[in-house]
Length: 193
Image 1 (cartoon, rainbow, N blue to C red):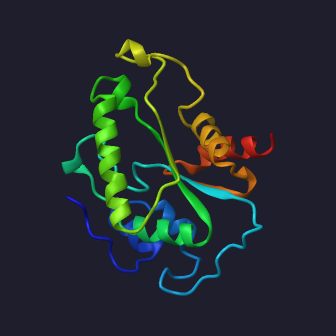
Image 2 (tube, rainbow, N blue to C red; image 1 turned 135 degrees about the horizontal axis):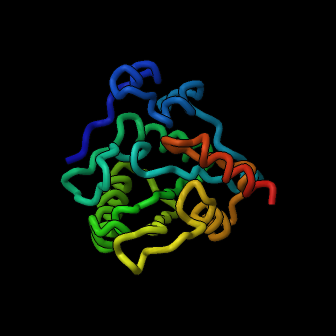
């Protein structure tokens, strides 16, 4: 059910294989190899987090992913997450889940898949500090989730919630997503407040 993490590859190799470079590979291609010793962050450094999108960054994008049998880690995602954690980032997940609002799957389906993902990350020695999801859409088929909210990315609501709960310095944090450019604007505006 889970794909094995491939060996060392460059962002260019990812681009040839997937049609785009994996966001973690691009961000971390200049960083030290996960097998090399890296200095850890000092205790007096600001608390910082890596806000990671789920689909396309941690797991393979499947289009409304909600079944365990369809879940697979993106190649190099686990190595990238380990490297971020080793560099002192709290690992968090922020994910839009409009399939709930569209009626394609339920909150319970999402929660079951999330428990599976967390268990697989735990087996790999990766701990998440927090997870937030947005099930809303302004024109949702499921009335309960029909709303314009401040949590659906690119709005900063989920990032803000996690930053407050974890006491994170947003200016020292990073956001990794398939559409980083749009979301990054929201993160920058948050760090200036």
